[in-house]
Length: 314
View 1: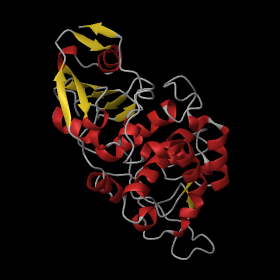
View 2: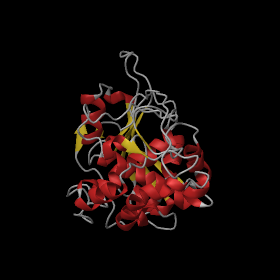
View 3: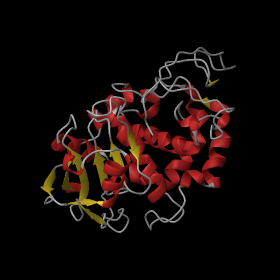
């Protein structure tokens, strides 16, 4: 989950045999925008905190990857239908009102139906304080490939600031099996939306229990995924080094960029020879989830995450 970003700078020793490129433990820089993964303080830190260097440039707003999503992921037409006042999906109330202290009156619920999945709408619980309009939010969601987007059925959109909570900084994250929260829709939106959808794919589509959405453990918890990480010895990104769960979502971003960017990851990274160091993770991801990241796939209503049916009177 993307919280407030902490910038850090680092230097690394040259990896033997790879001129001009480096593979390093987290701990000292290469434009890494995230806190370092310290195995002493984070028991979930994988691969000893090591990650691909040079970094896959998709971790910050207006990075090469972030811009590529906007340029190469097509949008799809959609229709909006506002709910009558008086009811909220239970996850929106539990997270938006109870947990994060917004008021029910701040939200309007919309059914959003995309042309690439016309048989079933998504629900967007839209906060009136959002700096983006509901149409802008829906347009960005429409970029997510339909087969990938079907891993969730609900988006909870906040404002970037709360007037009664100056410490609130917003965030974008996955609400377990409940949906995705967009609490920071100005910064880091495209790349974060792809990342967070990756968590939903992990739990609901790539799960060993798929195609019964939300019924089983995430694939990132499986021996197959951990064996792939162990074989590589490096996480896909600095952020991914924090846990197997984050590394799976980061690998999804890499796979999507490899799919949409002309020339794939090699072209995006300037033919970084260290891409071989994440080959097992890329292969394992493609085997269980790669099909969901293809642009030519339509949604499968049999696998789409269930539409929220539990409602709260407000």
